[in-house]
Image (cartoon, rainbow, N blue to C red; front, side, top):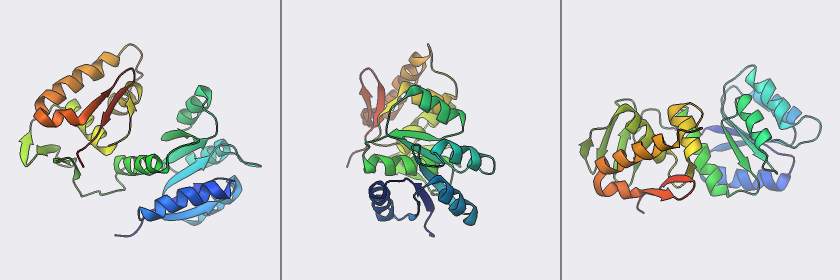
Length: 226
């Protein structure tokens, strides 16, 4: 299969190399840009870029300007990197159509996991393949789930919730993030919806329900057996 192209935009050469090394190891083709202007030149010159990893703080043209420009022409997934954790920045990013927001310093392995989760969600990774983890096989096209080759009967939301967990395996997911991605509405006052669905989902999954770990005070994490 042809390698997917990812554009990495950061004015720090060391950061670009770190991200590139991990993505290349995971069989992605990486294009690099050290500033916003060059990033746009590369973006317009390659029509098949699958995802952009974009730093906010850059000289001349910052990440926000690049994001605005790209969004006028494309819905390509964008992961924003920032050196500071600021809720206003995060809100601005989501308003501009950013798919994910990661604060530095970060684990490159987590970055790669999030890249893969976004590419699966946007159907660029494994379009016709099943999602598999820990004996669980999900076929999104057929809307079916099996556990150890036995079919599992799930409601629509339970299916969406399990798919989201498996696609983001190993990543701690807050209730807010789960609601925004599975239910697509603001989470205020609705966190109990998650807990109720997770409880039902775990019950239906039997022993495999233990793979959905509770992170107290935050949310959940799907950790498949090695």
